[in-house]
Amino acid sequence: LPFNLTVGDGPKDVAKRKLKFPKKNRKICKELKDIIKKLLVKDPKKRLGTNGVGEVKSHKYFRGTNWKLVRLLSDEIKL
Image 1: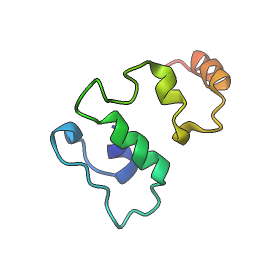
Image 2: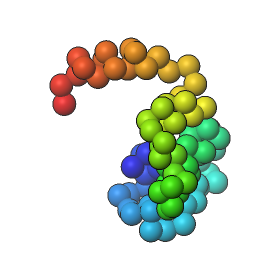
Image 3: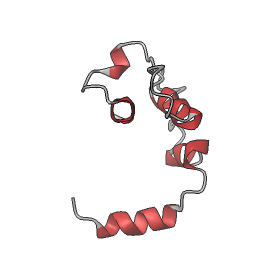
């Protein structure tokens, strides 16, 4: 889903096809590309997050994220 939302691609099964970022979309930062690739690794033992959510939260894409504030706000939002 993050890949599809980022590149404006339709709802396709990204895990079943080769991941290609469009060259025309240069607004995708390298950190976002990196985390998407690591979240989509087919081998679950090598996939980002295998060792817990802290592994994902500490990825460089989320550098500067105030996780306490995210938690507080997510508790306030009713989906």
